[in-house]
Amino acid sequence: MSINLSDKTLDALAQVISGGPAGAIETVGLYKRGWELKAWFKRFGVDYEKGSRVASTREALSLARFIDFDGELITKVLEAAIDPRDYVGHESGYDEALEYANKHLYFDGYRLARAGRSTRLIELAETATVTSELSAMADGIDFDTVNRDLNRALRSVETDPEIGVTAACAVVESVCRSILVELEIDLPPKQDISGLYRAVRDPLGLDPMKEGLAPEIVADVRSVLSGLATSIQSIGALRTHVGGAHGKEKGFRRIDKRIAKLAIHSASAASLFLIETWQVRFPGRNLPLVEEAKTKSPAD
Image (cartoon, rainbow, N blue to C red; front, top):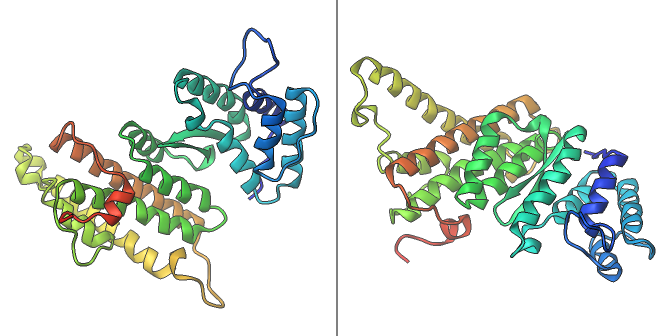
């Protein structure tokens, strides 16, 4: 899917990437010298012609826009333009650059968002309230796995909805697996989304009878939790039948992107509920990163 950025947005990005004119009183982004800008664009296979730093950066961005047919190049450039690793010791500068870029990207239908240790480009049209809240929650607890899978789901839903479903399933699995690892509970023999969710229900106390709820709503809450379990099970079943992880045979009929979005939003709602429940049950305890959760067993 191509990404169309306006000239004004490219002007703003040129300021951020170059760090603005030399000697300027007010600048945004980190200052890069000419040779540094040339090396920076070379990473993406884009030529940078020597000249005025800001103008040459703008020309390089125009070239990237011209040769980019599927949106991948521009996405990589944008996400690297405001890399949090570049702003270590200058965190306020990162926030300022992000805000400045997003004021312009908004009119093109995009925004850049912190995603753990990196920055991700998100299409505004695909960002529902629940996914935005989950993304913000994951940022707050440095749970970069959730954001990585969530962003992959959102970015795939238009062009490859099957991959979107697979990534949505991975979001819930990451949260459940991390909870079990942190609590030093053995991972279930069957580590699919349903098995992992069943394994975290008791540790998280997902039983309305234990919540001290008013008697008249206990049955209602139980029904909601039952619906949550059904939704999670259905996301797993959908991934099994159409998910992008299993390949596609000849004559495969693509899933409707509306269904993929439904799976993503349902997975986001379930994950947000599990993380918030974790925070209530175990205040002050952080969830491990996904790499640890996937490879580390409680017995280690």
